[in-house]
Image (tube, rainbow, N blue to C red; front, side):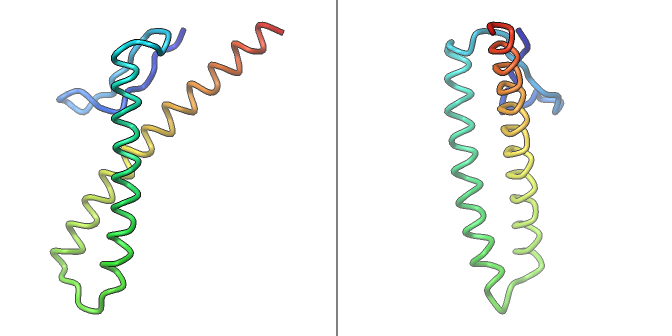
Length: 98
């Protein structure tokens, strides 16, 4: 059983992993946080589109947007990596059962 990459990091920025069957409290919490992160990414994309459509945008506004987009992309990338690893693990389990 491989560990699940969680949608948060340690205080030092290192990845956090959970070993388990995916049915416990921490797994459900991770699922909820991933859902919030994906919703926030979608909202941020909408805000980015609106801001970039404006003719007058300050460099401070663009910098703030770039920082938030970077954070969001990092979160979404971590979610994709975690889910991809779990899909690969599931495929391996199904192949063993054939």
